[in-house]
Length: 574
Image (tube, rainbow, N blue to C red):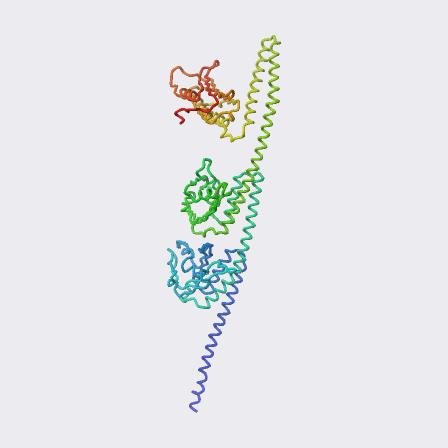
């Protein structure tokens, strides 16, 4: 009997073991069930959005939560195998700011993609491809890397490090992250297709808008501003600059800019020699720049911009300018898809610019034809009628006996002659091919007279007769402008005149400049170096120069040269 209790206790020992083992298995099953539920929730969360950036961020955060990792990262691969983008998770704001640079996708980080299988290590520092941590990067030990594949193509790598409580990643962690990466591939592909579709829609809309604006006659600068704004928004850039060639060549000028520092960038020149902007302009090929601080772009070098994209405006045979896009220093570089899209967009805009220029040329041709018709009508009809009226009045003079009436008729005949000369000058101006006012000789003469008005104290009258733009050689025109400037300067300094009149006449193979004023005249004594210079200029061109007093008071200056190129210009102008 005393042995009975001891015998009753023996069967309980195996039962306790069985219960304990069952409890462990139940906990494992519950843990597995919870992780499966978490995995399913993560997959649903990832697939519920079509924005690619949101999908990638959610995927990285979900992976860190599923395996209880402190840090996670997702590297998106570019065509060269490096990271086009890196998404870190787990870094505090202070830690992220302290990191000098994020990974490029080399060494141990390239292993999952190159081997196309997961890589799990107790200590990542033991891997032969480990290259150390960049300055400011937190120290990490345990490591799990899994490739993300989309339709057989490696899209990127998912990394988990520093399992909490000092453990290491196990087979279950590897399996669940691999399953998450596989499921996420579908969501990533959908997001990429959706993003590509939206980008193409926006690109087509922007291209259509650019073409419509240019062909409807909108200002080219406004259209280029719209081009820069759309390119910046579509590419995710922080700054967009349109560089156009300087009039003299040799440099590109920032004519259009869109972004936070646009006003500070405008009108900044970039030398075409030994710069990436100049190379793109000369070769007509787009180029991605890893760091704009080393691309000789003075407008951006010291402003903290890093990744850049340079796109030519036009074809390699006829490049009109360069579109420069830049991102702030720590942002991911532009990818090949963006480069191709912006390149196509810029090409479309360049075609629209060509069409707009052709339209403006056609409109200019219509204006020139209209000017030619008006000139012919003035010459063949109006001048002939005025000439006939003058001849009739001249023949009538013999019949008039009253001296006062004779004087009035003669005055009318003189007025008709002056009107005929002015109309002929207008005819010459209409028949001369249109040129910008600042480059035509007529325009430069008028500008010189206008510019002298402040120092003269009065607005000089200007009379231009004959085919000045068509018949005066460039060298003689330059000499004429120099003489005019010196003559008006002399009047301003010495004459004290209240009226000044400038007359330029080109006819009979001769160019004549006459400057009259009502001032105090030329003193008998005094320096005459300015007048001597004018005489030397005339003599060098085979002409003559003279000054004298007007009957009504003041000074008359006459500078006359033949209308042929000078053989030996004055020494002062060589």
